[in-house]
Image (cartoon, rainbow, N blue to C red):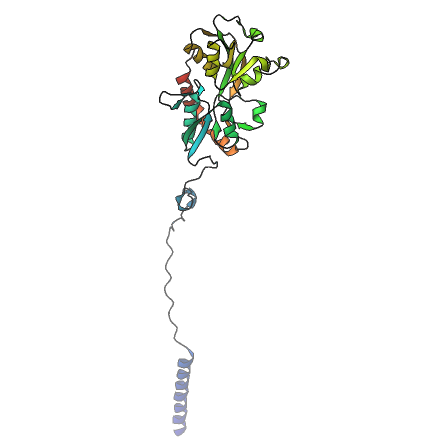
Length: 296
């Protein structure tokens, strides 16, 4: 009996020891937080490609070209060449070149400034950086290409001959018999006419240069010269304004007008060419020409 009781007590103690051992070796774990379920249709990431590109601080894109004076386009010209450039009664400027230059300046975001001077000085001004462009019925030749760059052609210049109605010079061929011919200084008319007879001219001794075409015409009216060689459109204006003058039939020479730039000023030249192309495409250029030159 005692032996049975001792065995029972031993079993109870063994069970107690096992229970204590489990409590010391199995630490209590903190339950992990429940995971947030992913949405069935997650939103697409924002597409930045469709947003307009902006510069830092929303600064406007600057022009690739520069001008003599910031915000302005200086045009050197000789405002005595109707209907391309001429003075108004109030001392302003008008004409085809003036209005075309104004339209170009507007497209470039600039204000046009017209600098009036003698024709030769207008060419020098653009070469030396005193003006941005030169427009004065300027024709293009190899000599000028050496010292200036030119835009695309924008008009055709036809040089003609003015004489008195009773002049013995009745045809262009008769010019070789003229004692003295008048031309505007530094123009291709003067350059060609004053060249030697072997090169198609009449010789320096038979050609006089005047600062403006108007002065040459006045010399013709006063009998100081026998003829004037000048571009067709101003020639028609001078004949209409001076009684007793006429135009000889035929064309003395045909040339193209272009805008002159300083040599190497490619950025401004390209911008002006692009603006001129737009003016021609939208009809603005032709409307300006039609304002001053009526169809015959």
